Amino acid sequence: MLTCKQFLQELNDYLDPSSDPDIRRHLEAHVTQCPNCFVIVDTTMKTLQVYKGMQPQSIPDDVKARLWQALERKMAARKQQLSSPALSDRLPFE
Image (cartoon, rainbow, N blue to C red; front, top):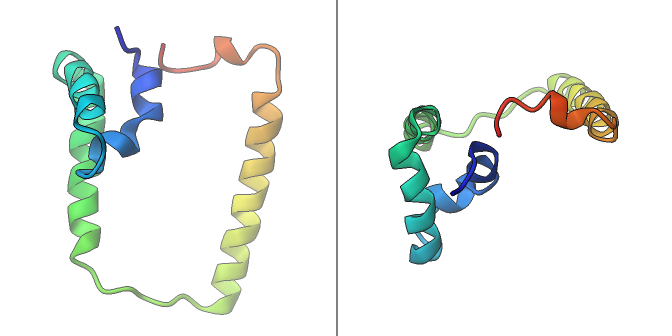
């Protein structure tokens, strides 16, 4: 049986209509039995539909620079967190 953590790692494949049908069926089996993952899929699909209907907007260079800096800090912190030996104790999905 697929865990929530495994499902979330494969979420892009589930949402991609061009992905392998066997993989999608395997993932669908989990979603139909897991209310938490169903909510994640439903919310993600609705969010994608909203954004697909929007026109691209440019952002000012200073905002873009601050965003990249924030993302780099977040990724560095996440990398450090993932290298911590007690990571499995903090994962929300199993």
